[in-house]
Image (cartoon, rainbow, N blue to C red; front, top):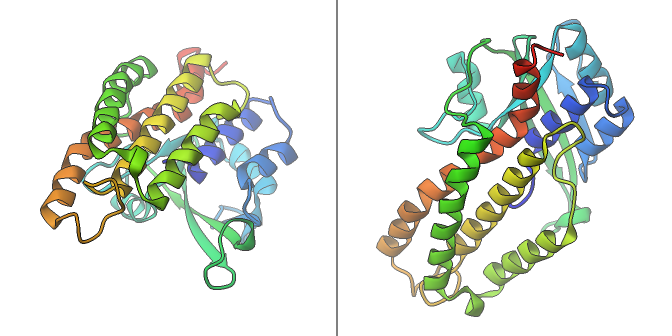
Length: 272
């Protein structure tokens, strides 16, 4: 959860485009981010996969008034509304975007190519968003921004306590690198949402990502401050996962609330 999910980028910048706050080219560039290319397959009226600019325009023509995010996990269909076939594929991908008003959802499939051991800019990433029918219904378990903010405050305390017990300051290289990356992002003052989102949504998303980063660090560090290995028993790893699960769930719920807030606000105003 340290990085923005692709569904979050698509919904955030897609909503800004639908609201007329950014150009189609800027929205497409922001959504693709560091990926080489994004295409959308299965759009009604299109015989083959198309680029993001055309796809977003087509979704608008099909009645889309906004884009919502789903970040489901096993036993937690967060943000989904059915049918079961779409939910199952979204759960496998761990994310999806729902086009409000169009009865359609988008699920990403990631293709990576590069030399063995390559990472970062040396990896060529292509994304195909598969367009499928969805139900127009209230998405599952999405809190309000106010609820999410209150829940995150407690979740942050819990994640910090776990880190203190693990002595992450003496952690191995993987956990330490995650901690350094988290600190760098926190200091960068980067934009986490597209134009058109309320300031509270920005605060909630930043805090959710902060909690998510701390969870990732805690999961990497062993009981002696090192990465999981022989010094950490299976029961200890299981116990730690159980302790962190409700914190991770809270952070995911808050992320979805933040990304979906532009649509919720528009609906409260009667679509204006």
